[in-house]
Image (cartoon, rainbow, N blue to C red; front, side):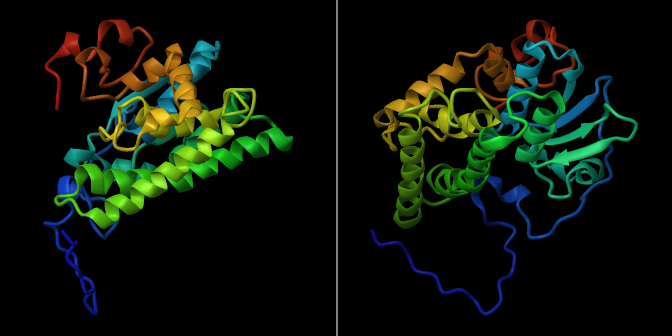
Length: 291
C-alpha cells in the first residue's frame, strides 16, 4: 500500500496526542514542568539516568574505572523515570536544561559541576581519571573521531529507524526503508573499520567503544528494537565479534544493570549507591519487575 501523503500547513502547531509511545514526554518547549529537587548521595559523582543506550554508556565507564582501581570514581546512580516526566523536574532541568538523560553532577571538587550530554560525560570522566582517552596526539583524535561519529549517527538509528520501526503508532514503508538503509550503512562503516583492529579506535578499548556499543552492539545482540533479523546483523561479522567481546566484560554487565527497570529482573538494579548493591539489591530481591 502506498503511504498517504501529507501537505505541511503554513504554520505548524503542536498536537499533544501525536507521537506514539513517547507522546507524553515529547513537547516543543523546554524548561521545568514541576518543582522537584534532585537527591544527593554520599559519593563524589551523582548520576541521574535510566538504562537506555545513552545512559548505559556512562555506567559502563564508571564500572570500568572502579574495576581498574579508581576508588574515587564511586558514584550514586539515581533513577530518572522518563515515562513519568522526572526529567522535567526543576532539579533535573538545572542539571541538564535539555531535559534528557543522563545528567551528572561532579561533586568531587569545591564547587559542583554539572555535565550533560553522554559524550561530554564520557570525556569529562576519561580526562579526570586519565583512562580510556589518550591525553594527546593522533590516538586521542581517533577516539574523539569515533565518539563524535556515534553522537551524530545514533539519532538516525534511534530517533529514525527505532522510532518508525518499533514505536510509531503506524507503520509506513518510506520512513522504515529510509532509516533501515541508513542503519545498515552505519553497520557497514563499523564492520569495515573493525576488520583490521580489535576496537573501533585502534588497539585499546576506549570511550568510543563505550559510546557505540550500547547502540550498535546491543542492536547486533538482539537487545534493541527486536530488529536483529530485519537488519540482518549476523552479516556484519566483525561488528558481531566486537559486540560479543565487549559484552563479555564484567563492567559491561554491571553497567547494563544500573538504572534498569525492564527485562530480566535479575539484571535490574534500579539505583546504585555501592558496589555491593549488585549482590543485595537487584530487582528480583527488592520487588516486582516493572514493565
